[in-house]
Image (cartoon, rainbow, N blue to C red; front, side, top):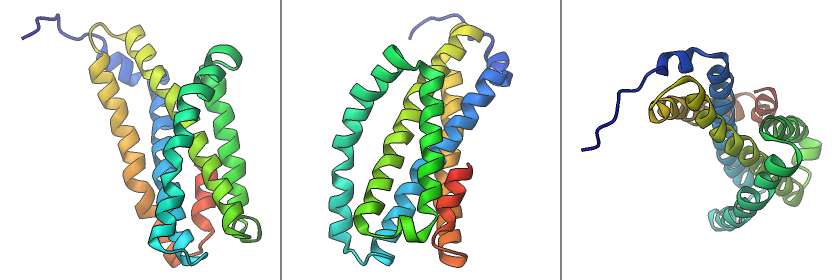
Length: 190
Protein backbone atom coordinates (compact mmCIF):
# COMPACT_ATOMS: atom_id res chain seq x y z
CA UNK A 1 0.00 0.00 0.00
CA UNK A 2 1.26 3.46 -0.92
CA UNK A 3 0.62 6.16 1.62
CA UNK A 4 -0.23 9.38 -0.09
CA UNK A 5 -1.96 12.46 1.14
CA UNK A 6 -5.54 12.73 -0.12
CA UNK A 7 -6.24 14.49 -3.39
CA UNK A 8 -7.26 18.12 -3.05
CA UNK A 9 -8.57 20.62 -5.58
CA UNK A 10 -10.19 18.00 -7.82
CA UNK A 11 -13.60 19.71 -7.85
CA UNK A 12 -11.99 23.06 -8.65
CA UNK A 13 -10.15 21.45 -11.55
CA UNK A 14 -13.25 19.76 -12.96
CA UNK A 15 -15.34 22.94 -12.63
CA UNK A 16 -12.69 25.10 -14.30
CA UNK A 17 -13.05 26.58 -17.77
CA UNK A 18 -9.73 24.90 -18.61
CA UNK A 19 -11.18 21.47 -17.89
CA UNK A 20 -14.48 22.24 -19.63
CA UNK A 21 -12.70 23.17 -22.87
CA UNK A 22 -10.46 20.13 -22.50
CA UNK A 23 -13.50 17.87 -21.95
CA UNK A 24 -15.36 19.35 -24.93
CA UNK A 25 -12.31 18.83 -27.16
CA UNK A 26 -11.93 15.28 -25.85
CA UNK A 27 -15.59 14.48 -26.46
CA UNK A 28 -15.48 15.93 -29.98
CA UNK A 29 -12.23 14.11 -30.75
CA UNK A 30 -13.60 10.79 -29.48
CA UNK A 31 -16.79 11.36 -31.46
CA UNK A 32 -14.84 12.13 -34.60
CA UNK A 33 -12.58 9.10 -34.24
CA UNK A 34 -15.37 6.55 -33.96
CA UNK A 35 -17.62 8.37 -36.42
CA UNK A 36 -14.92 8.31 -39.09
CA UNK A 37 -14.04 4.65 -38.60
CA UNK A 38 -17.65 3.42 -38.41
CA UNK A 39 -19.02 5.48 -41.29
CA UNK A 40 -15.95 4.90 -43.48
CA UNK A 41 -16.30 1.14 -43.02
CA UNK A 42 -19.91 1.28 -44.21
CA UNK A 43 -19.08 3.65 -47.11
CA UNK A 44 -16.29 1.36 -48.34
CA UNK A 45 -18.78 -1.52 -48.50
CA UNK A 46 -21.98 0.34 -49.40
CA UNK A 47 -20.79 3.02 -51.85
CA UNK A 48 -17.60 1.48 -53.25
CA UNK A 49 -18.55 -2.23 -53.01
CA UNK A 50 -15.34 -3.33 -51.30
CA UNK A 51 -15.17 -6.69 -49.57
CA UNK A 52 -14.61 -7.05 -45.84
CA UNK A 53 -11.04 -8.16 -46.57
CA UNK A 54 -10.35 -5.12 -48.75
CA UNK A 55 -11.71 -2.78 -46.07
CA UNK A 56 -9.56 -4.57 -43.51
CA UNK A 57 -6.44 -4.05 -45.60
CA UNK A 58 -7.21 -0.34 -45.97
CA UNK A 59 -7.43 0.06 -42.21
CA UNK A 60 -4.39 -2.16 -41.66
CA UNK A 61 -2.07 0.58 -42.90
CA UNK A 62 -3.42 3.20 -40.51
CA UNK A 63 -1.39 2.19 -37.42
CA UNK A 64 1.85 2.80 -39.32
CA UNK A 65 0.61 6.19 -40.48
CA UNK A 66 -0.52 7.07 -36.96
CA UNK A 67 2.80 5.97 -35.50
CA UNK A 68 4.58 8.57 -37.64
CA UNK A 69 2.00 11.23 -36.81
CA UNK A 70 2.06 10.50 -33.07
CA UNK A 71 5.81 10.10 -32.64
CA UNK A 72 7.24 12.57 -35.16
CA UNK A 73 4.78 15.08 -36.60
CA UNK A 74 2.64 16.06 -33.59
CA UNK A 75 5.51 16.29 -31.07
CA UNK A 76 7.47 18.51 -33.49
CA UNK A 77 4.45 20.71 -34.19
CA UNK A 78 3.87 21.17 -30.48
CA UNK A 79 7.48 21.59 -29.40
CA UNK A 80 9.04 23.55 -32.26
CA UNK A 81 6.35 25.24 -34.32
CA UNK A 82 2.85 25.80 -32.99
CA UNK A 83 2.56 24.84 -29.36
CA UNK A 84 -0.19 22.75 -27.85
CA UNK A 85 -3.31 24.84 -28.40
CA UNK A 86 -2.42 25.97 -31.93
CA UNK A 87 -1.74 22.35 -32.94
CA UNK A 88 -5.20 21.36 -31.68
CA UNK A 89 -6.74 24.36 -33.47
CA UNK A 90 -4.95 23.63 -36.75
CA UNK A 91 -6.03 19.98 -36.65
CA UNK A 92 -9.60 21.03 -35.93
CA UNK A 93 -9.61 23.44 -38.88
CA UNK A 94 -8.34 20.69 -41.20
CA UNK A 95 -11.06 18.34 -39.87
CA UNK A 96 -13.76 20.94 -40.56
CA UNK A 97 -12.62 21.40 -44.17
CA UNK A 98 -11.97 17.70 -44.90
CA UNK A 99 -15.28 16.54 -43.39
CA UNK A 100 -17.19 19.32 -45.16
CA UNK A 101 -15.67 18.26 -48.48
CA UNK A 102 -16.59 14.64 -47.74
CA UNK A 103 -20.18 15.75 -47.25
CA UNK A 104 -20.30 16.72 -50.93
CA UNK A 105 -20.81 13.31 -52.60
CA UNK A 106 -19.36 14.48 -55.93
CA UNK A 107 -16.08 15.17 -54.10
CA UNK A 108 -15.99 12.75 -51.18
CA UNK A 109 -17.41 9.77 -53.04
CA UNK A 110 -15.79 10.52 -56.42
CA UNK A 111 -13.41 7.55 -56.08
CA UNK A 112 -12.25 5.11 -53.45
CA UNK A 113 -8.79 6.72 -53.59
CA UNK A 114 -10.09 10.24 -52.97
CA UNK A 115 -12.25 8.94 -50.15
CA UNK A 116 -9.29 7.07 -48.62
CA UNK A 117 -7.13 10.21 -48.66
CA UNK A 118 -9.86 12.13 -46.82
CA UNK A 119 -10.20 9.32 -44.26
CA UNK A 120 -6.42 9.25 -43.69
CA UNK A 121 -6.40 13.02 -43.22
CA UNK A 122 -9.26 12.86 -40.72
CA UNK A 123 -7.63 10.09 -38.72
CA UNK A 124 -4.27 11.88 -38.68
CA UNK A 125 -5.92 15.11 -37.57
CA UNK A 126 -7.81 13.29 -34.82
CA UNK A 127 -4.42 12.20 -33.47
CA UNK A 128 -3.17 15.78 -33.76
CA UNK A 129 -6.18 16.92 -31.69
CA UNK A 130 -6.17 14.14 -29.14
CA UNK A 131 -2.49 13.81 -28.29
CA UNK A 132 -1.89 17.42 -27.16
CA UNK A 133 -5.29 17.48 -25.48
CA UNK A 134 -4.16 14.59 -23.28
CA UNK A 135 -1.16 16.63 -22.21
CA UNK A 136 -3.52 19.49 -21.32
CA UNK A 137 -5.33 17.37 -18.71
CA UNK A 138 -2.05 16.75 -16.91
CA UNK A 139 -1.31 20.46 -16.88
CA UNK A 140 -4.82 21.26 -15.65
CA UNK A 141 -4.63 18.72 -12.85
CA UNK A 142 -1.15 19.93 -11.91
CA UNK A 143 -2.36 23.51 -11.68
CA UNK A 144 -5.55 22.90 -9.70
CA UNK A 145 -4.87 19.79 -7.62
CA UNK A 146 -2.48 18.11 -5.29
CA UNK A 147 -2.35 14.35 -5.85
CA UNK A 148 -5.44 14.60 -8.08
CA UNK A 149 -4.00 13.89 -11.50
CA UNK A 150 -5.46 10.40 -11.74
CA UNK A 151 -8.94 11.52 -10.76
CA UNK A 152 -8.97 14.45 -13.18
CA UNK A 153 -7.55 12.31 -15.98
CA UNK A 154 -10.21 9.69 -15.28
CA UNK A 155 -12.92 12.34 -15.47
CA UNK A 156 -11.54 13.51 -18.80
CA UNK A 157 -11.65 9.95 -20.14
CA UNK A 158 -15.39 9.87 -19.45
CA UNK A 159 -15.91 12.69 -21.96
CA UNK A 160 -13.68 10.96 -24.52
CA UNK A 161 -15.65 7.73 -24.08
CA UNK A 162 -18.95 9.60 -24.32
CA UNK A 163 -17.96 10.94 -27.74
CA UNK A 164 -16.77 7.51 -28.83
CA UNK A 165 -19.98 5.85 -27.71
CA UNK A 166 -22.37 8.34 -29.26
CA UNK A 167 -20.65 8.63 -32.64
CA UNK A 168 -21.57 5.30 -34.25
CA UNK A 169 -25.13 5.49 -32.98
CA UNK A 170 -25.79 8.98 -34.27
CA UNK A 171 -23.75 8.87 -37.48
CA UNK A 172 -24.86 5.46 -38.67
CA UNK A 173 -28.50 6.36 -37.95
CA UNK A 174 -28.08 9.52 -40.04
CA UNK A 175 -26.31 7.55 -42.80
CA UNK A 176 -29.00 4.87 -42.95
CA UNK A 177 -32.13 6.93 -42.51
CA UNK A 178 -31.39 10.44 -43.84
CA UNK A 179 -28.42 10.73 -46.22
CA UNK A 180 -25.04 9.05 -46.71
CA UNK A 181 -23.25 12.41 -46.65
CA UNK A 182 -24.86 13.77 -43.47
CA UNK A 183 -22.47 12.15 -40.95
CA UNK A 184 -19.55 13.99 -42.59
CA UNK A 185 -21.36 17.30 -42.29
CA UNK A 186 -22.06 16.57 -38.62
CA UNK A 187 -18.37 15.79 -38.04
CA UNK A 188 -17.39 19.10 -39.62
CA UNK A 189 -19.83 20.93 -37.35
CA UNK A 190 -18.79 19.16 -34.14
